[in-house]
Length: 402
Image (cartoon, rainbow, N blue to C red; front, top):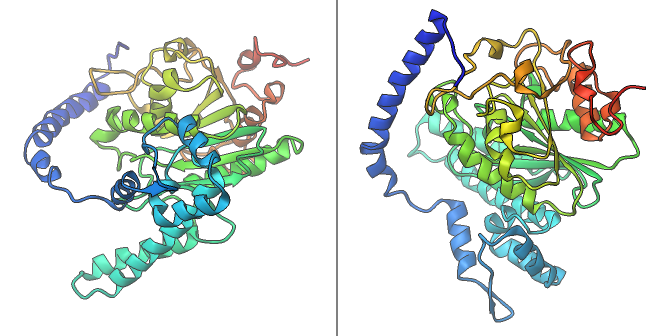
């Protein structure tokens, strides 16, 4: 456990420990009883229908089967049969790791259109308050944006604050795949932004995709904006613990195992997303070649070796990022461990000298984005290290400057 001796840090963690007690009391009391009576969500209903479905006289496979098993199942079907399943069970197929990516796009387009109609009715439902109608309008407009013909939605769940994942490029033909894993306050409504667009998952991924293509036009890349986990809301208890990260790690692992082909995969984990990537690291398949974190509060590990991954671990933090002021320690379930840009952590520390603030790492024209892109196309020789000793390239195949 990392030691600390300053009174501001002690005050922060005493407050967090007090909040933890309240959290446990609430979680074991009335909330538990309330949550036990929830009705099925739209996704659960679609999965349930799938479980009772048949095709060509045969029972459909368990939707929780390994992605490889589901991929083999879909490979036995013709185009008409696959399309039929997408129309009958759009949310189930649209979120099924192992289903062909193009079929998931088709299924999620159907599911988005269905949910758009639901929200359109809610907008004019007099039983709702003005706030409720306004919220319905916001969601409907988000669905309309996601339904644009040029968008490829790999995952979609309308329940609660919502989850979504989007692909840029061609997953099936990609030589290298990148996955952007965002942090707190990520949901359906914050998936993309008009202002500060590069601080939202869609903007981050779109920017990275363009930068990778510029870095190496000959390498076919695909980038996934992955907001398909329930992220913490704000900087409260959820953000101080690994609970959301542990749930998200299961989903991230399933995503990677369900990706087509065998091309290398790089993860770009921002803020709390780096906690998730740290928790997931030891179970991720070997095709994950790189884990790059930016603005990290910690990866639930004392050093990179303790992540137990064969992937290269990269880190960066700009001088203006407030995250550097958090206490890098772990006390029981609170806190996320050592600082990934510290020398003792052992990550390859990249330059982010011209990035600004906690959300500026994917801004076009920055060293941080350029470094991310070079990692994404495997051009380790071209990255800029945070320090003059070029240590971040040492020991990598082709990674030491000539």
